[in-house]
Figure (cartoon, rainbow, N blue to C red):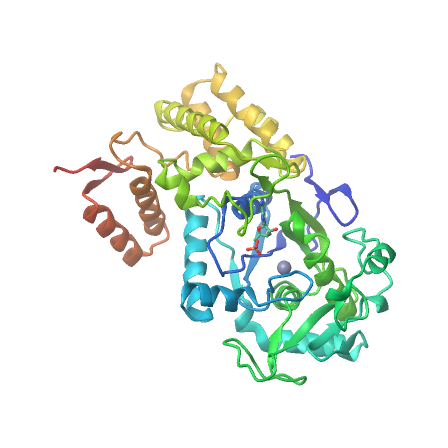
Amino acid sequence: MKPIQLYDTYTRSLREFTPLNPPEVGLYTCGPTVYDFAHIGNLRTYLFEDILRRALEFNGLRVKHVMNITDVGHLVSDADTGEDKMEKGSRRMGKTAWELAEIYTDEFKKDLGRLNILEPVIWCRATDHIPEQIDFIRCIEAKGFTYRTTDGIYFDTSRLPDYGTLGRLDIEGLQAGARIEMGEKRSPTDFALWKFSPAGQQRQMEWPSPWGVGFPGWHIECSAMSAKYLGSFFDIHCGGEDHITVHHTNEIAQTEACYGTRLANFWLHGYFLQVGEDTKMSKSGGGFLRVQTLLDKGYDPLAYRLFCLNAHYRAKLNFTWEGLDASAKSLERLRATAFEWGAPGVVNTEFGERFAEPVNADLNMPRAMAVVWELVKSELPAPIKKATLLEFDRVLGLRLAEWQPQDAAVPAEILVLVEQRQRARQEKRWQDADALRARIDAAGYILEDTPQGPRVKAGKG
Ligand code: AMP
Ligand code: ZN
């Protein structure tokens, strides 16, 4: 196989990827802030990261994938002002911030399952790592990169000569444009490491620290937890494109101050899902679509996965219902064709290589999909086509091996439960499997396990 090329935002170039400690790859992907549901724009980023992970595994590498859950410290404004999103969400929902975190973490994991996104090997919650974050801030403080204001401990970005390299920040320009919202910060790029609880007010989430009672800034959790689980310099760090200029720039600053490394060897960023030209899908704006919205409208969530596979991760993607319809049709066709091919034979190596080539060329999935359709149209014997397609599906993640024609009267939502139960069985989570079967029964559907896999029918009545 050709070596993997990945586009590294730090150097703004395609670079050949070789793991620091082969065959293991350390991968850290910034996770959700759990104050609300994820929208399908957020999930586009997690889909891109899933394809990256699968592509690395397809190349025989072992991926130690770590994802954080931000359940404290992410303020309404990325400039460290405004309320904590969790505390604000807690008022909106009439639940505690802790309850909110649990609800939306579960919902997030459910969405990952529905899109067949592999779960990280390690999940880590910011609130479970307060001592690690405090230690990290102490390290930065000991190296002389901090100062204190009335509302917290800040990182002094002027002390770091290459601050802002990742984001190619124009520091002087930013300084000239700085306005009053800077508060007591010395420079507009300085950011909070630890914020004090507001005087006379008890936050739901607050901890004692060497500097006073308060809570960690948003960026420190990722520096602290990635160091804990992957070391101070590891292979790949990912997130959405909006993380380039602030969040990841600041993660690098913290780790550089403490350990002298730029945190990760490769920095990869997924581009936005937009609703209409130049409007990113956002939690606050209109057009907030969830995986559940797609299910309610009768779509299989994997149609959205295929929709995303048809665009390169480094291009913005406009969401349209027509586009999703087209992907739903393609998915149906691919599944039905693969089913008709019957049992798999041996993989065709030539097609295997032709597929690996675009995958390894910076995850060019639109080109990889073109190879998939060529395979479908080819004159190869069905068992070979089937085996080759299933091999490709290790990267595509469209669950082509599991699919069976189902009774047309069974809605996508029930089919998702069937798939989840199947996965629970494969992972020997028998209780989960039983609970899922009970939900399918209760909804009035009949589930049968056949040698080819589960089949579901609409029940009587
Ligand atoms: P959040 O939960 O807001 O912290 O965001 C989770 C992830 O989704 C981050 O990696 C963001 O960069 C990413 N993200 C936010 N909006 C979009 C969008 N419209 N399209 C793709 N990714 C997004
Ligand atoms: Zn992060």
